[in-house]
Image 1 (cartoon, rainbow, N blue to C red):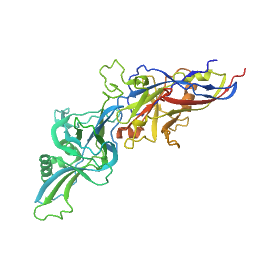
Image 2: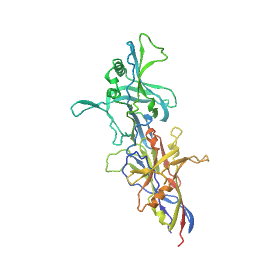
Image 3: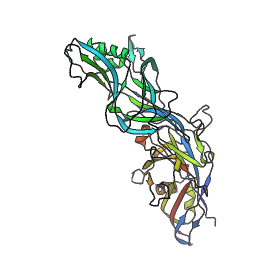
Image 4: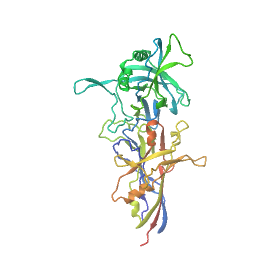
Amino acid sequence: MDRSFRVVAGFLFMATLFSCNFSKVEDFTLGKDFVSSNSGVVMIDTMRMVASTVHLDSIVSSKVTRLLIGANSNPFTGKITCTPYFQFNNGAFAATLPTDLVYDSLVIKYNYDGYYLGDTTKVISFSTRQLAAKQGYNSNGTLYNISPFKLDADGHLYNTSTFSLSDKVLGDIRFVPHPRMKKDFYFRLSDDFGHTLFNNILNKNDSMTNRSNFQVFLPGVAFVSAVDQNQSAVGISQQSLSLRVYYHEKINPNDSSNPTYFNFAVDGTGIWYNQMLYNSQGSMLGSISVNNNPNIANTELASVNTNNQTVVQGGSGVYTKIRIPGSQLLKGYAKKLVLISAKLQLTPQADSYSVNNPLPDTLAVYVVDRRNVISSQYSSSLGSNIFALKVIPTTYDELPYYVLDVTQFFTNEFSSSTITGNSLMIGTLGNKTAQNINYLSFAGNTLNKSLFKMQIFCYVDKSN
């Protein structure tokens, strides 16, 4: 009797993401042996799988605690450029201010949150840009201001969201990041804009009276990376950002060790998000990020077209997918078959991670249909989410790997009366996807070219 079975295992993404088109991918076979007896526990390690790398359209990146600045490129996925957008709130000022105040400088204060990827000994350069103001007319013909930000129908902004920027550059910034240092840092901005803001405060201009009026004056700010910037990206704490106007009293100056300033914090009820523009050209993934023709599905690449590798990257929407096309056929092997357990092992390629690009402890897993539309996060029968977990071998010559329990996936396939066409897709954890751009590649065994290892244990009774 033929004891080989067709099975596909796959990786999936977070439930907040949009779908991509499905493209035909190639098959490959795992393992060689199927050990069994007429009755008893059998182990199946011959599984035919379909593996691919998928680029999802977009991921939610608004209201994150980390804003990313800079860009980075790697040979596996290509280049990703990070541009944070955010709004400031109006400040609070004393009812009466001294008449001898003198403007000193305008800065943005910030703190690193410890995240980085790339060479942080090299200079990062970007321009601080103001968002372009918009205006419209209400029903009675009165002109009014419109927020430059437009949320999606679900109330979010995505890594691909983009908005018009004013020609006004508030400052050109060049700095060497110090992502591990725990202290206040500052970006110096334009004194022309600083003087205007300072005078508005002293003159009690309407723009200073409330949040709405202030955001007409300054609709929002973006840190736009230079075109040739690809050395590194760093994380900044969203809550630490503030706009400060430093000044001094001309007649009765304060102690210079305690400089005085007017402060404008990031608007906690406003809008902020990470824009992360992705370009895969020149990398192992080729043009997977380019949608020149919507009728051609180029957002999925078979592992046979990527050197028998699949890739995962936060921020870009790149995930590994495993499909098990013959999973339902297993239940037909014997009249009485009880699934005991099924586990999948995935091994990252050694040169796709490092001390500065560490492997995550946990990867998220989602269930997707034939067109890579997410139906749910992969979970147990009790509703608890199931993840791919990193394992560090005890022997020095073994590489780290991930283990995913796919028992529930097979159970779901067994219980379906039709062929579902479902796959599993693995990627960065949902709440971290929009806050990092780390990457890793899963690689095949150099001897048998198997990308993943599968073991399924069943109890079978073939007796009549």
